[in-house]
Amino acid sequence: MSILIAGAGIGGLALAQALHQGGLDVAVFERDPTPQTRNQGYRLHIDANGNAALRACLPARVLAEVRRTSGVNGDLVAGYNQRLERLTAQTFPGISDTEVTHVDRNAIRQALLTGLDGRVHFGRTVTGYRLTGTGRVRVRFAEGGTAEGDILIGADGVNSAVRRQLLPRATLRDAGFRCLYGRMTIDAATAGLVPADFNRGFCWVGADAGHGAGFAPVRFRERPDGARDYLMIAFVATPEQLGVPDERLFTLPPDALWRMAADLSADWHPALRALVAHADAASFFPITIRASERVEPWQPGPVTLLGDAIHTMPPAGGVGANTALQDAATLSSQLLCAASGFGEAIQAYEEVMLPRGFDTIDRSLAMLTHMLAA
Image 1 (cartoon, rainbow, N blue to C red):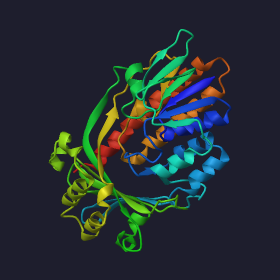
Image 2 (cartoon, one colour; image 1 turned 90 degrees about the horizontal axis):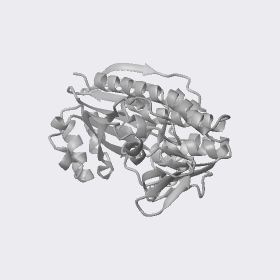
Image 3 (tube, helix red, strand yellow; image 1 turned 120 degrees about the vertical axis):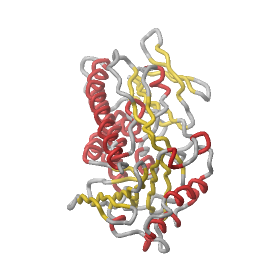
Image 4 (cartoon, rainbow, N blue to C red; image 1 turned 180 degrees about the horizontal axis):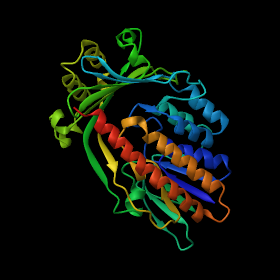
């Protein structure tokens, strides 16, 4: 059996690792021209579910590479007002070094590519598929050409072409917020600017209703080539608070977005303003915070979906990547243990994946509303 995966994000690559390790023929197709091309975010939180999924999917040497290039574990999640007064705090003492609490998106992608030489094809954009007369799946690429396999997994993200064809009525809703991502390099000149708590984990600064920013460090256990430690900065606001319509926001250069972040925090505590002032102006980019609407189960077949392609969710709680990893672990387990055919394996996967994913979206939306309350 041959399996095609559209999308080389974290979920798609974790799935490819598990299936390849289990002896199945896997080909992954990714629209990014290179492994380094991705403006989607910087730091990813990995929770207990994500760690369990990584252990289930990855061979030992790949898991070791993920851990080696992950961030030094943090032990705090805290909330503050714009005067830098702590309002809430939750600590996580005694986290084992064998666990991963957070990763850099590009670093984990590089780690997950380990051992998949010749199986991941960059610069190949899946635009659709068709079922052949023999029941196989043939995908087509924007760049030209096709590929054929027995199963297709759409792990191609928020704007999934596979989802549009499989579930044309599935919709995404605008959650009403925009996020400006950026980062400040942590080096000898800036390390002293980072408040002590901000070095320990994710810290949220809530300002007006609908407006706040998250700060979280990535201090690599071992830096990948070319990587530098950094503090992720993520401003969240409504379009009205940004004062810029989407058609303009998404065409602004990074330095203009950096200035927008500085304006949003102009009346905040001086220590917070200093973090924004010393941020890398070229690192800022915007995203729309969206959430998938719940869909009813569909007739299982040789095409299914994984991660953001089926259950896009807000970044609140850092659960998106973990849910995609859980999808990969569940689907690979079903496919590798399929005794009665792959159709039943996919059906069993979808029966778990759908309620889990959409319940997680509900919790993420509730957390976002709480974080951005007045």
